[in-house]
Length: 404
Image 1 (cartoon, rainbow, N blue to C red):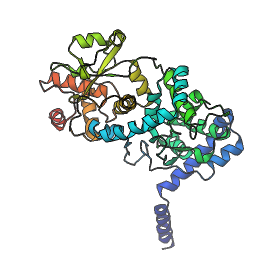
Image 2 (image 1 turned 90 degrees about the vertical axis):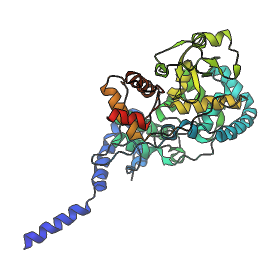
Image 3 (image 1 turned 45 degrees about the vertical axis):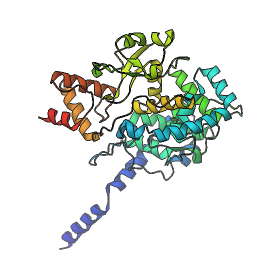
Image 4 (image 1 turned 135 degrees about the vertical axis):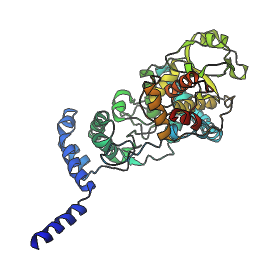
């Protein structure tokens, strides 16, 4: 009888010992193991202990790989909204109006930024707008907790471990914990820098002796410009050129690897929007075809600077938002071709498509449920092979065809 009571007590104790308790103990052990690498970066023991004391993982974050738990996919609007939802005219109108006011307020600073880094002021203003609504959006997370969690149980542990260590170094170098607010991915400041990028690209542009991407607009905008320059921004070149695609356009060639001079695309029937006359320099740039909604919605020719912006945030919709807003701040008109009302398939359905396209040898990128350039092009190739309408857009009908 006594042994039976003891067994029951043990089972009750095991029930009360939730997975969170087990994870916490392992997390504390993992944290302790980070000390040598932090010390190698110049972090003192006092700073390390203060930053990690009482720290617990935030298992509510997306993009984690927790054994036995369903994955919580990132809900970034860039990847779950349709172009029509993400690229709203009301947003452009509001942000462009405010952007023009700020362009006047910071005219001299923006002129200096362009002179030093080659990046136009309206481009860095558009990044500021998209990242934090010109500083009006308050970042919701503690960056130390976010980066530690992602490094401990995220999908990209090595990447985020490096960012976590650099975040500790930022504390060591005088950044306050109160300023270390971030997105779920650990990006900080007015223009959203990862800690390692802060050390690579941050600039003291206002001359006060410290690079402050949280409170100094000159520092934040100059740092964004330096980062774009470091990623290969080409001064004087456009980020993209909106065009009207000919009726016989092959949307499946819309991949970065297929480039032609803009003049060649024009000869093939891609007409610049609003009847725009392109300069000889414009016509000479090598560009890819971008059709964010396949054969629906606007089409764009994308030179090198498009992909530099995409390196800042790996999303076509993000680049379209920033690039178009930069033009609107400078006085340009809305997109000539309207976005369609096409529905967005669920992430899991797009992943199913990607797996099928991979099995057929048509798709060779990651399975991420995002209908990006490579997925759309592979889908177009599938449609051609199967005698379907070639529109390079993931629909329920094409998904059903694949399942059959």
